[in-house]
Image 1 (spheres, rainbow, N blue to C red):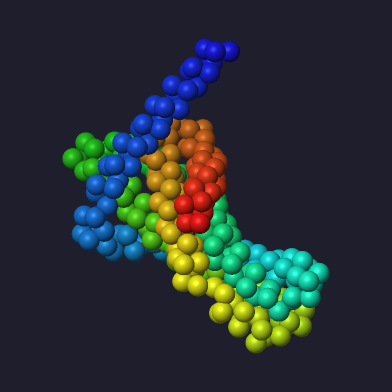
Image 2: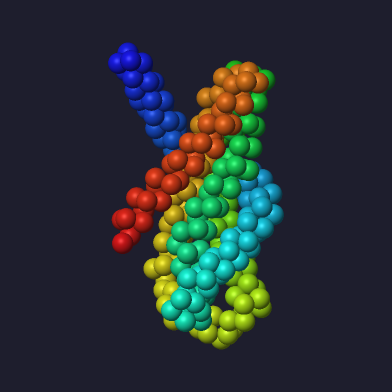
Amino acid sequence: MFRDIYITLIGFLRTFGAFQIFCIKVFRHSPSVFFTRFPLVVRQVYNAGSLSLVIIMVSGFFVGGVMALQGIDVLSIFDAQDVVGMFAAFALLKELSPVVTALLFAGRAGTALASEIGLMKATDQLAAMEMMAVNPVKRVVVPRFLGGVIAMPLLTAVFSAVGLLGAHIVAVVLMDVDVGAFWQQMQITVEMEDLMEGVYKSIAFGVVASSLAVFEGYNAIPTAEGVGRATTRTVVLTAIAVLILDFIITAALL
C-alpha cells in the first residue's frame, strides 16, 4: 500500500513539475505571439468563444431563471420579493457566471483544444514542425492558449447578461415582481468591487482552463486511446482546479 502511495505521489509531483515548466514556456512566448500573429489569435478566440455562445447563452438564461425562482421562494418568507434582482445579480456576477462558464468552457472548448493538439501529436505533425525548426509550442499551443484566455471573460460577460435577462423574465413577467424595484435594488446594492470579482475569477479560470487543455493535448499519448484520456483529464482537472481556485479567490477578496 505504501509503495502505491509513493508511486502515485511521485507521479503527481512529476506531472505538476512538467506542467509548471510547460506554462513557463507558454507564458514566455505569449507576448510575442499576441503581437506578431494576432490574426491567428483572433481565429482561436472565435473557435473557443464564438462557437461556445449557444451553450453559454442557453445555460445562462435558465440559470438566471432558476435563481429568480429560488430567490422569490426564499424571499417570500420575509415578504421581500422585490429584492430578487439583487439576489440574482450577486449570485450571477460573483459566483455562478465565472464558475459555470469555466465548467462549460472545459466541456466544450477545452476538450476541443486538447483533442486537436493531441491528434496533431498522434499524427506526428508536431514532430514534423520540430524537424523543420518550427517551435510547436509557439506555433500551435500559444495561440490556442491566448484564444481561450481572451474568450473566457467575454463568455462570462455574456452569461451574466443573459442570466440577468432570464431572471428578469421569470421575476417580472411570470412572478409579477415590480420591474422598477427589480432593477433599482440591483443598481443600489451591486458595486464595482462585486463586478470586478467576477472579472478576476473569469481571467484566472481562463488561464487555468486553457493551460490545462493545451498541456493535456500536448502531452497526450500519441494513440487514439491516449487522446481520449487526455480529453477526459482536461474536463476533470479543470473542474477541480476551478472550484479550488474559486474558493481561494473568494477568501482572498473578502
